[in-house]
Image 1 (cartoon, rainbow, N blue to C red):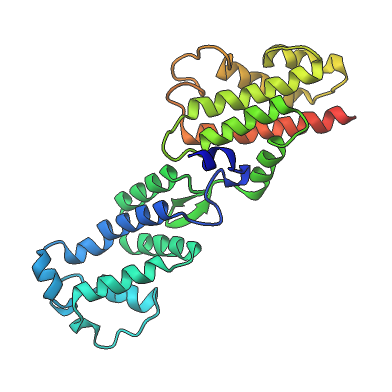
Image 2 (image 1 turned 30 degrees about the vertical axis):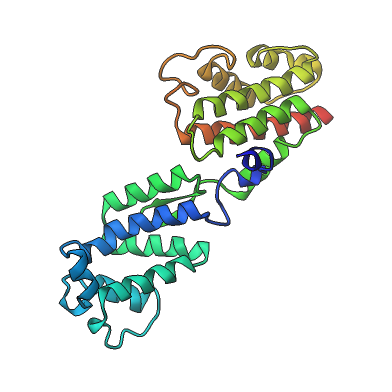
Length: 277
């Protein structure tokens, strides 16, 4: 939407300090599928609406959740209607703070020990651009504050060409409907090319510009220069056609796109700081 494209900030690139409604629903659907359906799956709708928890197999899953995650008294809940229990749990879930949603995802993973559950949860997290993944029974960040700050700085330099390409990469990367990782990588590389061209004083490809930087007074550590030269060679020309299978091609992954956006942003910031001297 217009507001998503033009009002998006670089620190909104991933859902880090909040969960939107779509992600909340996506996670709930997976929780229900793997957790609650194990309790209710054998029942018809009519049986479900009238049966009590006490008549249901595997009811320990629900009792455990009530007692040890929701911290509610279980009392005589075995006599409660299943429909009522599910309504209460859904209401509880809808009102959870975003971080408690992740607590629940993690809690259930530790109870189920089901690889299919964690695989589907991670699919939902990636699809909704969450800044977290479920790894070894724990919710872990995949991007930190320093990386976010680096992207923020690179998107707000005094050079419009650089800003435009980094912001375009951010816009594409944060799009929850279209996974166009190829162009995230392309725009990130072009942003670095633009920064290098500004420093050397003429339009150059990144490969050529890296060779000219020292001639323009920017002394770069040989290892750093070599690393970006090789990375550029690996992605090939950002304005041309890449070889199949290379990073930056049509089969590029979320991890590759994130790596390139963060790395290119950090390199742009490095070039600007170094060029001041």
